[in-house]
Length: 289
Image 1 (spheres, rainbow, N blue to C red):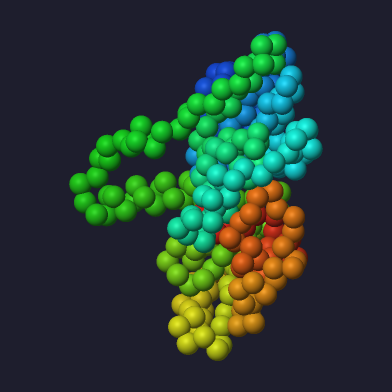
Image 2: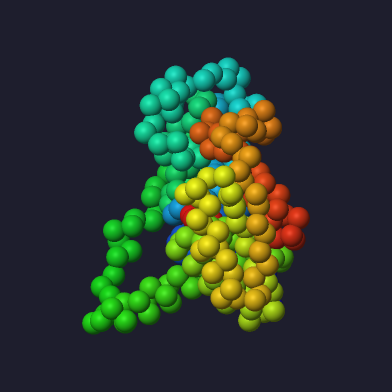
């Protein structure tokens, strides 16, 4: 029965891992997640983020209060004298790329609010008030020798790992959607998802931005159509994008925890998410995960 629950509930899986192996069991979890676990016996509150940092985690220690949240706002309400962190502001304004949801820093836009970094384990002892963070995922330590003696063997190993990663991220409750630009990366992931979903009789919804007035981007349509021809089961969603200009939707950006340069393209992210939701999907695969 426990195994059946683990197959349908992420929380049940995390609980089973902790009961069997303790905190090290949580560190073995794979996928896109942020989780928290409280041990009543030891009065320890633990939390961790996956190595890619798909979901955020923040924490504060204000006097005798220790609080943890996936959002900064409820934590900010607990700080008596909330102030903007000027060092964070300077780092944000001088960061060399615009394609970043948040800065890769432990501190945040507010003094006193700290971030649990990707691949980190956060632990708080409630009786003593001691809080500590440690990195549980080290990329260099995950490198293992590959027993491949040809390009074909190496390709088969890459395909095996990639299919497993896509399989982990398919929705278990609704449809899965995927970005589908016609490029190698997003389209390849979408076609793998389509092959895996076909075994369960579920279609993949392909989200494509299409252009008519941009000569370079217009050429993507040829690749999109060619990829769609390879599977009759994929449900295409061709979204006209010529009028989706940067900063056009800045007034509709929702209240964010921190400043984000991704707000400049909010109209694109919004319409992709809305199209997926209207199609009945609760998971969207993009170039990251």
